[in-house]
Amino acid sequence: MARIGVELRVTQGCPSAADSAGPALDARQPAPLLAEGEIARLTAQMAAGNEAAYRQFFEHYYQRLHRYLIVVCAGQEDMARDALQGALLRVARHARRFDSEEAFWQWLAVLARSAARDEQRKQRRYGSFLERFFRARPPEESAVSPAQAESQLETLLAAQLALLPPEDRALVEAKYLAGQPVKALAQAAGTTEKALESRLGRLRQKLKTALLAALKHEKDA
Image (cartoon, rainbow, N blue to C red; front, side, top):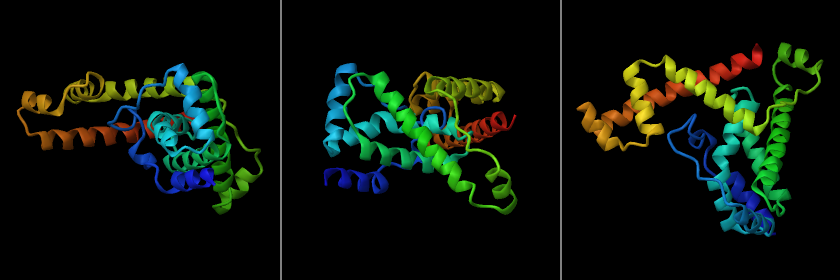
């Protein structure tokens, strides 16, 4: 019964994937990784259906899973969002204790790839020509590892940052890499905090669009 309640909260109460896409796609930084000793406690409580444990799990792994799925789904944001929802449901249904963060993350990555394959199969049901074309091919499973996904996002982000005008690049790096507050950046730029936040929002959206396009291009190449 406790797990049913958790599953309902997964489908209704977890943050939007579009709002929690990690540092490469969103302004917020993900929570730091848990210490090894904390993993056993957290996962044991999750297996028991403890809602506070699931809230802590979302805080530490939601953005990380979404970043991974963005790469697995080759930049297809809608598919990644739906796959993330499926992965979280799998976590709620099959939660068990893990003694190491590495083993726990590898398990989460397996669930995420399984959910992504399900979404790929669903999408192949739609569209006339594309449906016939893809139906003749076996389902594709991404071989990308979590570490490769993070590295790929970091490489693509660095490339896109390099394409920005120097002033915009310096602003993004100051805010999201150096962690300088908006107030100080606005004062240095001689503008208001609201105006600077709007500018940062436009730059984030520009980088996000470019990252997703780059991921799709690499998938098609």
